[in-house]
Image (cartoon, rainbow, N blue to C red; front, side):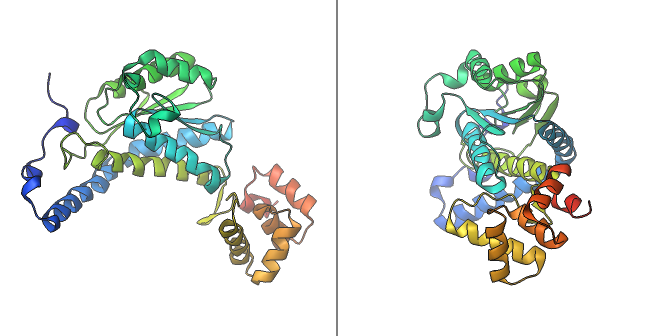
Length: 295
């Protein structure tokens, strides 16, 4: 059996333990720069994935990340970040990690080797044909991820595989395989490094551009931000100020009058209409500001 790329030794770091701190940092930085270049190669495939996630999200489907270890943690992180950033429900973007919540901080023995566990996890959240199941595995061979993709295929869900090897097992199980060859890690087999960085960048792209596509962004502003603290309330007010080109005090009043609904506040001002009418316009136009103000 050939050694996978993620398990191969990196020629540039064969004597990592003999390098000065400066040399080690320069080497790591040079290796990290390869990640973005390799992601550029797979942008056409990633475009197709995001077309599907956007389409399905609009129809009530969910984005479901599945992974073990670092890959699983990154999926859980991206899903969690969607809630405050885009005001998604916790059931709209979901991160499943082999071994459950405990696996976020400690290794759960045997969890990633259990294909059946993946099926149980998907059944628990009632996966359906509307959903997009995204399996993440640096090696491309994690049994938990394979099990998840197999079951999702049976259900009729869309399936995506993200790996950092070539010709991987999970690629063969998914409708949309994405393989990012970032080369051997600085520290042999430590896929939290370049592989983890590649996965993080890809998940950033999937969630962010999907949310742009479903109307949660105006220009480059987070107009669906969930204001759970004073900093985010202030950001919401400043976004209204920016879009409407009014004073902070006017924005603050609009925000209050709209019951702290940023989108409603903007439509109220730009169309000079009541909160009730602004809400109706948004509902008629997929909750997208630019459509609502042209209604």
